[in-house]
Amino acid sequence: MRMNKFYMPTLKEDPQDAEIASHRLLLRAGMIRKSASGIYSYLPLGYRVIRKIENLVREGMDKFDGQEVLMSALQPQEIWVESGRWDKFGEEMFRLKDRNNRDFCLGPTAEEYFTTLVRDELKSYKQLPLNIYQIQTKYRDEKRPRFGINRAREFTMKDAYSFDKDQAGLEASYQNMWKAYEYIFDRMGIDYRVVEGDSGLMGTGVSHEFIAMAETGEGIIVYSDQSDYAATDEKAAVTYQITDKEEAKEMEEISTPNVKTMEELENFTSIPREKMAKAIALKAEDQYFIVLVPGNRELNMNKFLNYVGISENEIEMMSDQDIEEITGGPAGFTGPIGLSDKVKLLIDSRISQMTNFVVGANKADAHYINVNYGRDFEAEVVEDLLMIEETDLGPNGEKLEFARGIEVGNIFQLGEKYSKPLHATFLDENGKENYFVMGSYGIGITRSVTAIVEQNHDEDGIIWPENLAPYRVIITIVKHNDQDQVDLAEKIYQELTDRGVEVLLDDRNERPGVKFKDRDLIGIPHRITVGRDASQGIVEYSTRKEKENKNMDYKEVLELL
Picture 1 (cartoon, rainbow, N blue to C red):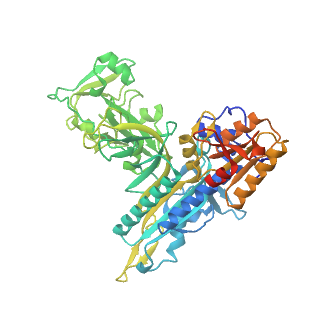
Picture 2: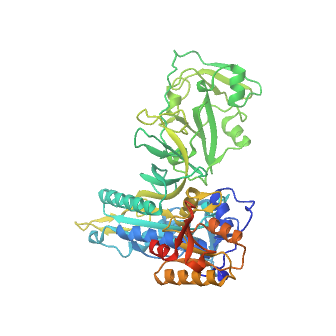
Picture 3: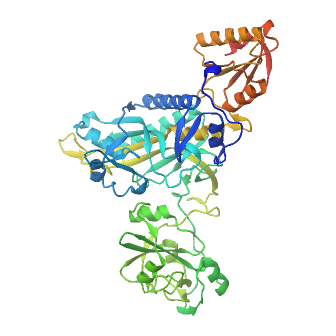
């Protein structure tokens, strides 16, 4: 491609709203443009990268027995009502009506679509296992789109679904996709870790996430160099132990005027926070919850939501008015004693192990001290509701490391979560009707672009891996009006093109400095500079990564490439 005809609107300055390197560089390199909040257009250079990643993903999926289909981004309401997720998905779902007033959504995911696709087609165990996938645009009305294409409202994703006759078959399919993902992300050259993930609204049971390591990543992962343990901070099990135990003392109410926070209570009573119980007041429609965790720890909302079976979109903090109506006392003084039947009391298991701790008294300016579970109140005990912290140890006592990353892939064991409500069945060897046992497997195509740039850039621009770069070679003519330079550049361009090498020829009427800056910015792996020695057939060759210039005969460069 000749750059005097190429649409590549690079920017000299960093865009003001770009928060991370990938967002900044993709905009500056003329690869993406923002259309609206969380919505982007892909320009020629950027779209070439997208296509290469898609093809690499196809290669990996096909190698591991995936079969590609393409389903509409427009999904009918009926299948979401069948699965029970139409109301649960919440405000992230784009909903619309057609001219006949029928409800549809722009697909945020595709479990329902794939399940209903096969339920009328697969009838026998002999047709199993099956793994089908698509690469399609997904839509989620993110509350706060950010980090460019990393958290956008429209994004490209590969989603695959496996259908098996039993759990053993699902586990085999799951491991097969795990290997496929390792193959795909290794081919992308991404530095990643596989961690235990939270299934959330998508699945149930076992799930893992493929996390591209990046300091600017939104997600936090926890891992150990002393074992193979790794998990997201939302999933990580907390092994925090209560060691300070005493003989139970008599419970006592104390006056705590205007003392509402853990910090204020600690200062007022001189009792350390680990001897207190923190109450979190939550509600979901007509359900009310008081959750107790140790005063020096934080509630892990994902663990709570998974335990009670409520989606993130349904839960909210109780208002001060709610708290007063439910507990009989003002906000800031909520505790577990004397609650009405309207509220469900849940406690982290560590609360049940504590002795003589402090709680709110559900009345203004008052707390109880020397409270003990079992004697002074009863509750539903949950094994682990805590957020992992850096001082915590792993499940086998190992030291944990914390790092940030970008989720580029996820795999879920769905089981019968979707086949049951959608009544997707097959006949087994005995002619008995069974539900498909399913798995779900996603790769963020556009997210992978973000991860690759975050891991491959310097102060001058992007450094693309060779197999994913929009072009493999860029030829720069130093002086566009020097005929020797033009002739040699054209000769090299033609020979490389004839050999199937993807080449950009910078024949623009621009200053050399502009061309070199653009060349660094867009990150083409191999660079040929045709300058003053062109009449002797000598060119300057370098790679984007090393930037070490070598004078070489152009024929040597052709052989090298």
